[in-house]
Image 1 (cartoon, rainbow, N blue to C red):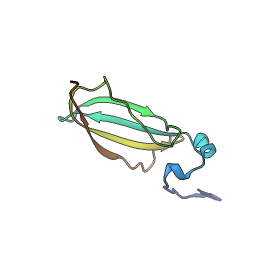
Image 2: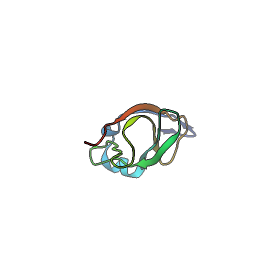
Image 3: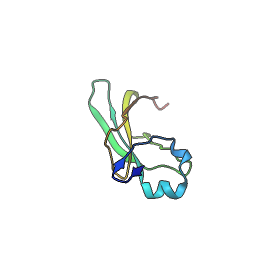
Image 4: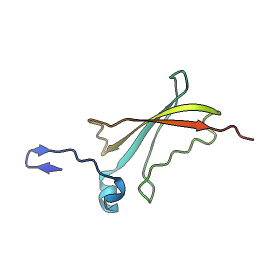
Amino acid sequence: MKFQRSYEIIREPLQSVSPDVRQRAAPQCRYMVLDSEGNVVLAGTATPSENATFQMVFAGKLAAGSYTMLAQITVNGNAMNADIQRIPVHVAPVP
């Protein structure tokens, strides 16, 4: 939010923002996936779906095993004071 020459960062759920504002703000999820040894095995970006959630599809991109995904949400490409989340990911073997 902008107040004359000052700015204040306000975090709120993406679902609470109207669709037209979401489209103008261009939210994006940047992520990278690390293997158990800390090596980057996958990286990319995702845009929000119609229900204002981010979905990453790893099918066919990762072997079976445990991984850690680091993810951050940016708005208009702004990554200042980013809140980076660590999310465990488990890929099951294909039968």
